[in-house]
Image: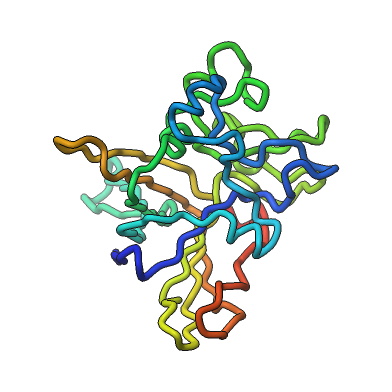
Length: 258
């Protein structure tokens, strides 16, 4: 486990899709925190354009910046399963590794209901990828988007689509399940060339959301991203002092890596 102060890490969150919202081959949304009641959007401080962008380019990733982060916890673990003992065999316990798990927990100042809507909903009914009814009001956009190859459009993933089947429109091999969390570690704007390192959590679902309360009201919120897909690390391509990072990992995850 590693813990970073918010000032030591640049944080960006995108969808796993590489298409731009609104382009000829992708409808809206890429992944959204929009809700059905526009009055609620205004009351919560959100705007109709509040969304998590695609990872179409470095510029698109930079537009998904998460500001006001006070702390970021990065932890890795392994999920094991006990095998044995078996009848007629000695009492031997063996553990079999099922998968690795990486969790990024972000604590930030709460300024609106965006992440609360992402986790709890309601979602916009027209953009909901489920069966309709009131389901869009009961669930947020915790699992990113999925592409409807028939309608050539993207919808909010309701979590019922298997990861192997959550593929990019026009591709049968690129998984777009969940979100991509880009952590630029050590890129401190101190006037010197310090490129740092980009740690990328791929295909992560939003698995937790909490807020902290005190006598004066809500102060901070915590968002938890969890993935069982191996993360990647890269060195930013820019080395210019006080410049924004470039060279993000925006390659979609092949389903063979899941």
